Each structure stands twice: as structure tokens, then as C-alpha cells.
Length: 147
Image 1: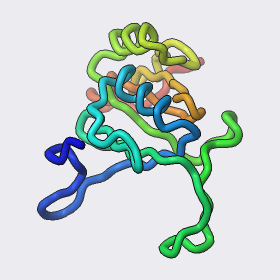
Image 2: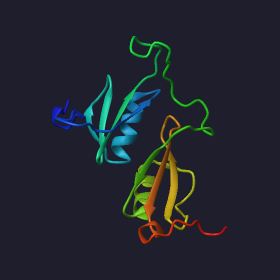
Image 3: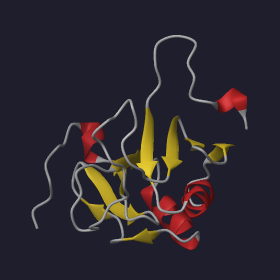
Image 4: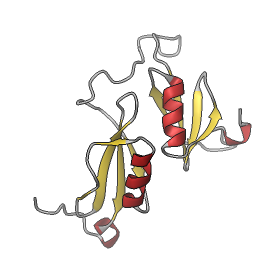
């Protein structure tokens, strides 16, 4: 365990993202190798520092005393999502090439949306991850290009 990198603020709060995964080792490998995440805790739960945030990953399970009517499970349908992780990058084309070479499976290459360049990845459990680079947004252009 790397106690110096735990998401444990001395004051205020930090934001982490919890993923329910089928295979902790497989997910740990994906997030550490593809995105260069730093493994803080290997398992129970797995904690990875990813840039300026943390991912916490654990297998699913049934209700617990603090969530008495909630069951955690990975996505069951890759085509229906209610939330996704959003990663902002400085150079989307370099990330696309690098992360693809490391095994990331992109849905499409980066697409120019006017305000940003954007593409999506799925992690090993099917979680959707948006990868974007602000372009027109930096100049106040929020419009999408006409298709």
C-alpha cells in the first residue's frame, strides 16, 4: 500500500470514482497500463491514482448495513449507460495513438465536434470513457460543426 497517495484529505474533500468490476486484477492492469495510473492499493478495494483523481474498484455485491437495499454490479448492457468517466487531455491524437497501442479499444477515432475533439473507449467491464480535448471551447465556440 502507498499510504502517501491515498484519497484521504487533511481538510475538505477529494473526489474519487468507484467502479464495480468483474475482475479487479484485469481492471487494475487496464487503468495502470493504458492510462499510467499509480496503484495505491492492489485490492479490497483496489485504489488507483489517475492524474489528479482516484479510481476505487471492487467486485459487486449485495446490500450492506450502510446501503441496505442496493446491489452493486458491473454494466450489463454496453449500449445503455447512465454515466461515464470524462478524461480531458492536452493532445487527443497522441493519447489516441498511445492508448490504442496499449490495448484501449476506441469506438471511433477522435471526431471534431467544434468545441472539442472527442472519442470514446470501453474499459474491460464495458464502462464508457470519454476522451476529449478542448479546441473551439477555448475560444468561446460551443457550436457543433454541421454534419
